[in-house]
Length: 227
Image (tube, rainbow, N blue to C red; front, side, top):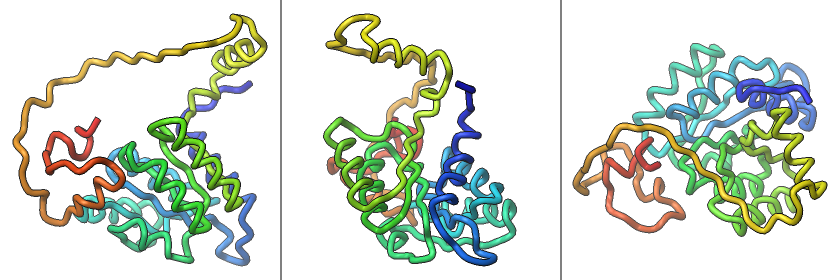
């Protein structure tokens, strides 16, 4: 199987959705909304905006400052100003949106996908698709129940040697698999310590937490540092 990189995979997502959706006339492109518009979401914006099969019609982030930073990125990439939302629920009410690209924090992936399916949107969601197997099954059930396309960002599964390894395991090459563990070690600088405090102006922190446990705001649990 031909190896495809992450960028190509995301572009193919829009093309797959385009073949599914029937939009007449000059609007024969998939109208995409990107949810979570920082680092990874910014890449989603650029890729969907440059793809002739899609266009970014809306962006959504709980941090209004991030929406403001993303606006010129969209305009520069496609010459069109998108709608701006802070609340995902309001975005999903938008009938002009065909598909939702989810680049939020991990704890929002499953619920955002399910809500999008219920709203009649197709979905691309970043990895990890879910926090656990139970959530993952609910995502699959929602996609099937509402007849939606849902793709998760597991791009490395497309690499030839990994595809071959999966086939061998499924064929019983190493016997019955009863346990699997995955480890990833990466050097990162310390984030130090930070005190709890109020959320920055323009941030809907309650919405940022979403389905996650209630915790006071802390800069070390926000944006990229939530990892």
